[in-house]
Image 1: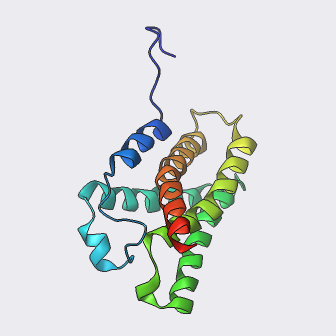
Image 2: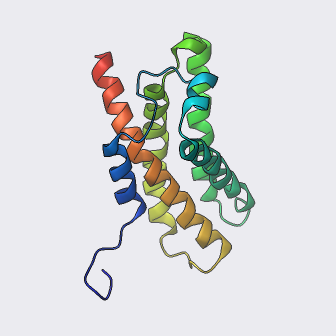
Length: 157
């Protein structure tokens, strides 16, 4: 709460507003190919690049902070799972919903474990700043991913 009594809006709150508004061009059934990526709004394309930068920046911390491997590893694992789906199903079968499900499976438990294990990290350190950025990025993204994963599973069952 702020001094005036109003609530501070966090990344999850902002993501919920965007997800509810249908601010994305893709649906869970959209095939994730170059046409889908190029047709997304500019802010979504920028967000995707930013995610790669933020998660990838964790490589700078893995020697001194082994927990950084958890977040980097979850990011890589979700992409390897998507690559395996392309190999098994073909490139025209990988959908936004499948990618969202991969994110939910790999990122959710690791984000919770990482946040729990590193919660006492000083924020005024480079690792502390990255910790806030990567957890915020994961949470923001997972709001969209859960929406898309649930829709994907509902349509698949």
